[in-house]
Length: 499
Image (cartoon, rainbow, N blue to C red; front, side, top):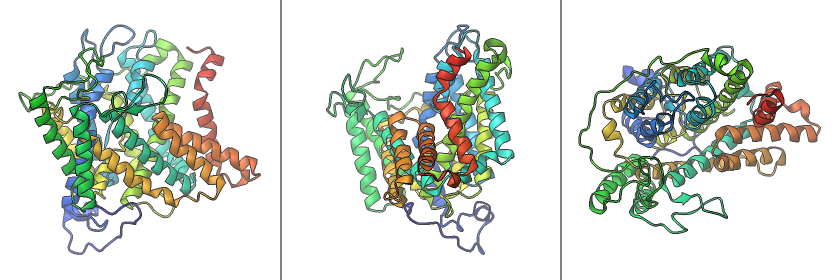
């Protein structure tokens, strides 16, 4: 198992390194070729769900004109899945080659739901208009990177707040793992959630999750290299056997209604009839850059772009800090190597996702599972990207892995990232309270941006109250003000008369 975030990756000489080794600095970052490959595979398996889930979110909904994505009168999920995998593959490879960072990319969850239900369904809006807004947001955020503004904001954040972001994301991905597996579910009333079904671990799929988590932990404590990846593969094999014997089926029916609470989440783990199919990339280029301004007016379109922009802007900043910290790559200020290149590739991902009509592509915190396997370079991202490209042909094979088999990896990685919490000075209330709010709101609101924004705003307010406003970096003032506008976006719309 790779070193935890407590250690900093040591740079070593590369005198005898191969060309591949020198390009990706594999030896220099204390890694090996096998670790990078395992890390890339682990990252892919923990985020491959997006190839199935993104089509279910954006491919099954009509726009305001009654058309589905791609302009058809019926959903074409295979087309959306293939294009989702294609863009994820290209952008992950680009991140690996350009930024040399173990960070994979794919369609952003949350952003795709916002585009689907908050944009495409607005009166007179089409899917092409909605994706045009995503492209515009990507163009703006790319300009902010090229002008140095996005990087400057990142450097203005106090180091301990960056640590809090990493810890909060660790809790966030752990709760994602528990919820996606069905280990924790929304209760009918009372508390925010409950254990399993009605307070009990009911159903064979949950047993697969528990056993998968146990296998991964056992391999981890035994310091077996590849523990996370082997855990995923073992749990998937077990799930296939359980489904073959028990005929459990999915939790939801074709309409997305939960009819079988003890069934499998997302995918039913069974061997497919075929392992390959010819991909359909007809969605590429299916966007209307300025159509939204004609459909809903300038003010409404501008506010939608601002909402997308702010969420995308800080989600990635938090993600790359967390990944860099877990890999031991960040400097003493909590800044990952080649941070400008990371932010630039991520910004291009927003444009690429919109231009391909699969919604904004962004950096995935699930990349931490690859770092947990020892990945330290962009080669791991290249491996993940190649797997996504293969998934455009192997969509039936990708759909074999259920949530219950993949999510134990997220819980384990959440633990690894949580270890950074000791680096926060909890005796200093001026930083401890903003850090606490940052950490706690990410899992509770299911949003990285909300946690970051709340922490930033409280940090500035505390400095004002303490008479230390002069210690706040000017860009932190600007950022806090933008987040206040972000949190108050609905009242602002009301004042401006925007629906």
